Length: 152
Image (tube, rainbow, N blue to C red; front, side):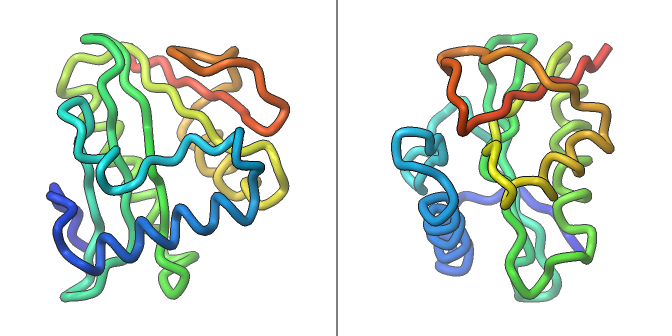
């Protein structure tokens, strides 16, 4: 598996983002979806990564700069045929490493609170993320959980 910086122009990456958006729509009410589309992921403060095996996309994730010391994990998704292969773990490890290189002291994320998101909760917990209050522009929402990781 190779994780690379992705410019979001490859049709396979765009298809995975579309799958991600559809999955969020299936599992969350529209007012609780904070997933970004391709245009949203092309913002200057977001760095997008994808994982590949040969010519096949395995998954993706992004790092958004909130402040010069605080980053946010965005758009974590594993392609269905690559579930249970450690793709999300590898991408999250890569994002945490990059956040530390940038000098961030904190990395946070928002995820769904429903059962469909329990595997993600377990992944984030295994990296040391703990539950927290809403951060940045998020507000209390029973359909969202907020997690943070101290990088010091």
